[in-house]
Image 1: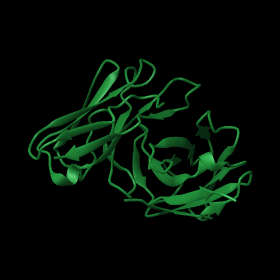
Image 2: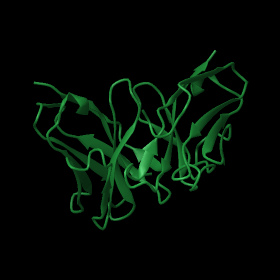
Image 3: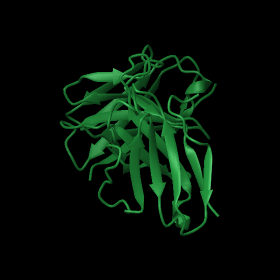
Image 4: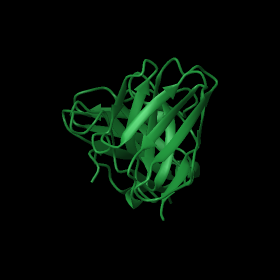
Length: 113
Length: 117
């Protein structure tokens, strides 16, 4: 079981918006601004799409946005497109010495209907 | 942008040592943090550890007793050693660069390492 909890799957139709949640604790997601999101297409390496909770690296579409409330971070994708169909992972710094330094969520499969 | 490429044996026998190298191009390894991540087939991502150009490193506690990450600045490479492997270590292994806020911003293409006799 992953340290950060994500829904296993979400779906939406083209043009719609979807939100993927990532729930942790006050020792990770809730306590720091070091939350990142990754997009992974089948057979490809993950790609950083959000860092520092809501920062979008250069080249990432502004349809992707990140936020955080309490111990839960969220990734919102607006104006869904077929190319957004992929797996999405969150990660966070953790201050827990027993868990290491970086935690990943279990991943969410996005299906564009 | 920095580019990374993993290399090493694709098949390792149980109880033996997995050894991978990541070659960095486009920037000096004498900057940033450098990390290894793995992904078992059909499963999620697992952070293995990272190393700073100074040599300071940090590992996933679940792997710490078996893992070493090291730098070779003369070759602009960093390496992963994982001892006493089992079938559970079969995974795609990725190397990546890390930002100060622990975002993994550049990734290698990944290499599948299979542990089998």
